[in-house]
Structures are given as structure tokens and as C-alpha cells.
Length: 211
Ligand SMILES: [Zn+2]
Ligand SMILES: [Zn+2]
Image (cartoon, rainbow, N blue to C red):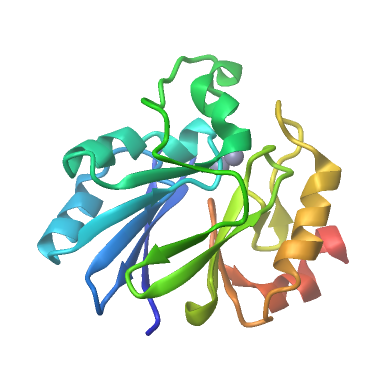
């Protein structure tokens, strides 16, 4: 069964926050909650969904600003998921100080990834792909049965993520895209942290960074 994806554009940097739902089990996950959102909360409650995970692609403040809030709305039951190599960024306020303000992401995440682990979302298996480059602990969440992936700020429609930030590395970013993203089936839909969705095939053909 294919999972359902809803996109919410939130916050001053127009982040995509995604609500991922398994219609069979009514389990749901949020990807990169940029800021608290009543609209997403209503959608979860109104549809009788149970929120099991809050998936973070990387710890920049604009991707985690709503994590603690959403967790608290559900008796702290949803697990916040983050890669270990982005814990430093999480603890330092998600890089917000570089933009001139302070930010506190909250307590430590509940599930700290060390490897390319497998996470169960409802009846679907989700692979964690380690895709450093934009940050050192950036991951992509890939759902093979639904042919889709949440790729954060790794790759965008005809673009790539910034590599001029504190824990960025351009070589890593290129390797991550080539080895982890371009090896997925062409029809895989890529849901990025900002801007419209795209596909693996489209980016292999037409991403100016690789052509
Ligand atoms: Zn970022
Ligand atoms: Zn971003």
C-alpha cells in the first residue's frame, strides 16, 4: 500500500513540512516540522491518525523548529529521529546563531541514528540513507514500496543544497547524490525541504549541477 504525502509550506524560509500517512493502519509521521502548525495538528486529529515519528533530515533550525511542540501535543509519544552526526548542530540551536538569533531545539531526540537503519511507518518499511554534505549528519528517508524519498536540503528541483555552512562539505554532497539518490529507481519522487517535488530521473537528466 502506498503511503499518502501531504505538503505544508511553513515558516519564513518557506520550508516544506510533510505529513506521511499509512491509510491502512492510520499511523502517521511528520518530516521536518519547521514551526508549530495547528493546520497539521487538526489534520492528524481530524483524521484519527496516530503520530509515531517526527523524522528530521538534518538539524538546521528551519527543519526542527516545530519538533518539540508536535511531540508535546501527543503526550511525548512520537519519536524524534535524527542522525548522531547532527546532534552537535541540534544542541547548538540548529545554526540559528549564524543568522543572528537564538533557538532551542529541545531535549535530545528519542531515536539517534548511527547507521542506515530501517524504520517501520505503519505497514511500510522506510530506509534511512546516510546523505551527508549539506550537513555532516544529513539523512534521506526512502520508502521503496511507495517510490518516494524525503531528501531535505540535499537535492532540489534542478538544484542542490548549500555547502557553505558550518558542517557542510561539497564533496560529500556530490557523493551522496551520486551514490545514494541517483542509484534509486528513476520514478522515485523526491520531496525536498524547499520548493517543488521532483523525481530521480528528472534530476539525473536535467539537474544543472550534474550536467
Ligand atoms: Zn538546511
Ligand atoms: Zn532548509
